Image (cartoon, rainbow, N blue to C red; front, side):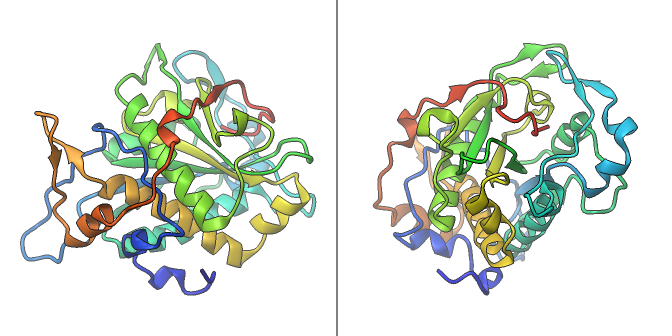
Length: 312
């Protein structure tokens, strides 16, 4: 697929492409569709809310006192935010994540979603990790995706998705979101890999492209399905070249948007356990034409502390 013109492509129509599709591990906890006003055309994500959380902030480097303030993430204290990492050439993670979030927003808006960014270059620093979680909760988001890039050892490469661990401490109780977040994360992982060709991280996760973490405020304090995606390793030469290229970032945006759309447009189950039909023709066709299978549900994501400490 060419990297140009992707914003004009329907994400759900792309679900019929064998090269991109994989039957995502979508469990019965996938969120239900919100009511759509009468008379409006029903787009695949109409009535759905997605929160995109661009990691860090380009202004954080000028506000170290503010971002180093400790905040309560339920099971401990963490800095309000961090500066993030960068490539050897000086392209910062904060620049990358904001650019990627804006590209993903274009695609999701075209699908009818309401899209909220935790920051859009409109804040001098932050927000704190606690506020990032609060924004998703206040929006009653159907999915929250925090966008990041890693700063691991340069010999490591690839991407991974971070899932919330079960945390019950202080203001944190992730039990209701662990299962749907995992479904979101696996679906996002598969779509991103197919769209970009980026391999699963070689330096963590045991080759699954998944990690489970209990130390991230954005996940601990979320009340809605939420995951992080580390789109590549900025300290690795090959990954840095991809992350720095606008054309490749368009592919990355497509992969993120595709994963979110697949998660939200998937059939859900009713209280009896029977599969409920989706209320959009295109989404239904996309789901029923899927023939590719996956073993994603058998993945066993690793649970560790961050290898680089660059994620908030």
